[in-house]
Length: 242
Image (cartoon, rainbow, N blue to C red; front, side, top):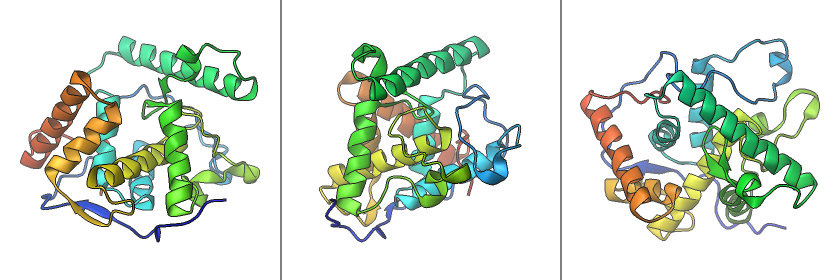
C-alpha cells in the first residue's frame, strides 16, 4: 500500500520563461502510426488528429504538475523532426519490436533477451526500468496512479496502465511526465517540489532523462538550444500548443 507524502497539487514552472508560440500544424515526426487503445467514443475513428495528441501532451504535463514545455521538448528530442521517411519507419519498427518483447516478457518472464525486452521504446523512448520506477514513485510519493482516470480507462473499462513503454501512445505521455516529475524532485532535492526551477535546473532534468555521461550532456545542450531558439522565435516546438 502506498503512503501518500505529497498533496498531488504540486506544480513546477520555469522561472522567467517567456511566452512561446504554439504550433498548430502536423507533426513532422514520428511516423504517422501508433499503438493506441481507443476510448468508447473513438472506436470508429480512423485517425487521431495531431491537435488532439497535443491536448494529451498538455493534460499529461498538468496531471503531474510539470512544465508543459518540458514534456514538449523531450518529445521533440526523442522524435527528431528532420528524419527521413526511411528513418521514421525504421524507428517505428525498432520500438515496436522492443514493445512486443516487453509485453511477451511480462507474461512469460525470461522468454525475450533483456536487450530487447528491457530496451527503450514508445513515443517517449523510455526504458522499461525507468517507466516502472517512475510509476511506482508516483504511487508511493504522490499517492495516485501515473495515469489520470481519463487516460487510464478506455472502451469497455479496459485498464491501460500496463507499465509497458510503447504499448499505448497516450499512456506513454503520462509515464514520461511521471518520470520528469521524479527527475524534478531529484534535481531540486525536494520530494514534493512546488514552485519555480531555474534554466540550469531544467537542463539537469533533461540531462537526467537521457542518463549520464557525454551523450546525456549533448542531449541536454541540444534541447536547451532548441528551447532558446523557440523563445527567440527561430525554432518550432512541434509538440507544444497552449
